[in-house]
Image 1 (cartoon, rainbow, N blue to C red):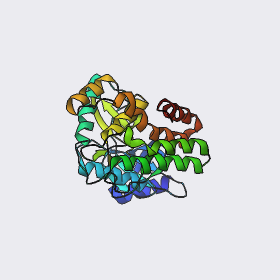
Image 2 (cartoon, rainbow, N blue to C red; image 1 turned 135 degrees about the horizontal axis):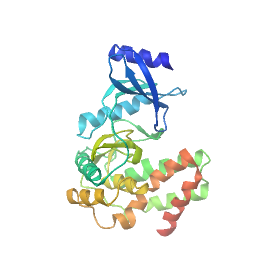
Image 3 (cartoon, rainbow, N blue to C red; image 1 turned 90 degrees about the vertical axis):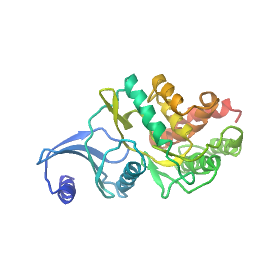
Length: 285
């Protein structure tokens, strides 16, 4: 592993690694903080699996940097098995001022308009395939490429049984009764949970580990509530910039969170399906 990281660092920066320390990372590979001979610090991800796909994460970070003002690490080099990025200081403890700053940044991101829901290429969420075929209708996109896709994959992998898949399918057929079309497709980070955001001195320094696509901003806000990434200071500030329509907190956020719950069921176990079943039951399915 060290030889491969040295190879990438030499090729990209003409430097050698003098010190390496592990960092906590996402679902893909190992993450290291590297100190180089010239004193510069960078972050390296290394995926030694049979089918490495770190180039997709590199693509997503570069897309956000090119198409938005969201602060993300600069990609230095990206290959399927190694992703080299600038080191950005910060931690995932958010005071009120950093939450308000996050609201400003995400509201601006959601103002970036796409031609359709989806993205020019498929991406990943937590290492899982995330299809992004361009779709004019948001409800249809969420139905087929988020909810039904992830549910069917969970069934194929044995995480979920056929009866629950049938319930999800019946509910998906009725999504028009519950969801709204946005004014336009918005660029989304796609995976705003606590450790994917860094802050320092009351300001956000970076968003990392994205799962980008164009969609309804409410799906991003819903994910933020699922694991309490941010609290009232964030939502109060966001609502002032981009008013949140009635019914989101009461109903729609739980519908949108069916998707990350299915993601977590595939990644971490079927216990997350209890919340899926609870939402379906509450909505009459």
